[in-house]
Image 1 (cartoon, rainbow, N blue to C red):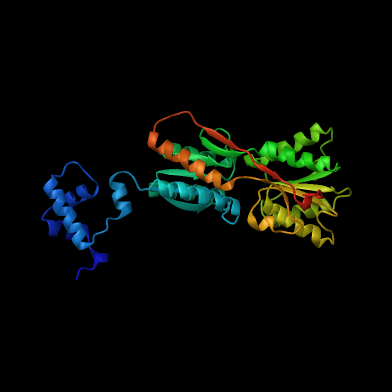
Image 2 (image 1 turned 30 degrees about the horizontal axis):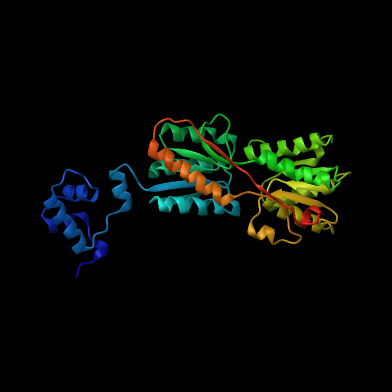
Length: 340
């Protein structure tokens, strides 16, 4: 009985009476093999149950059938939904997706990119850590690895990108709070070196300016984009001499921490503090009192981004970059203090 798990290319060559190189040519569909030889090799492969290594076969063609998706935080369900969309498109096209988590760390991002280059992935979809990722992205270009930016852009990098309307979405959220009568509105946001944070701060400012409200720098708090950052950011706002009556957080993870901070002070959302944020992920939509959000189509980021990446791989060469901006849905729930 043949042990299929241990069958090698040399076994196939021996059984079909050819060299291992000829077997490799048959596997890789080379035209440099006669029909009779091809038939004998294919019969030996079937009889022995030989399964060619996908990676080895790909390397011989300079193709590995793999793509990479690099994100800054796999604990953020927004990026996991992007992965789902990316995998759906990739699998239909015969590709596998390698997920990489940079943990918003530039050093780790550089290492992961180096690993993906060494692994010879055929393309990369990446949500970069920040504008300081520029050198890492240029390295991809140096090695000829196609890439597409997801959710974020980087100054000085011309590339295909799938983005959300962060400026317009943020402006609409803050305008809604103003319509509800709020005049002191806080913002919990990450560093301006991240394009989405930069754009959402801009939307916040535009809403204030449009309503003739002055900017109070005390109301803008920089934090990490996770529940801990939201908790400490909201604490700072609540302890101001003149605290805000409403807060806009850069995403739903920050909002979760902000709600905890409000409750830790013996207060409630929305009775004592109105709250709005970006992103609507399942567990956030179930959180009492239900968050008012700007919902982004996360899965569509993955599908469109991967489609752009595959087109870039197939076409090759230098072509004009394409930027897709996806609209978000404004969903009013109880956290803002308005009727849904």
